[in-house]
Image (cartoon, rainbow, N blue to C red):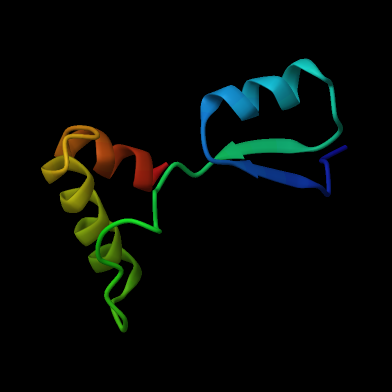
Length: 73
């Protein structure tokens, strides 16, 4: 049976703790620091992902390709 609860964490540390604690529900990671950098209004999903991926890469958080892969996942 598929869980009806979804826990969204901002990193693997919290996600791992949730999994280890065996708290019911699916665990997903969304690691975009949206409180930093541009979040242009009116962009379609792909354009927003690209803008955010470019910001993360230019800031040195990750490579552009890794950021794009994370957003696609």
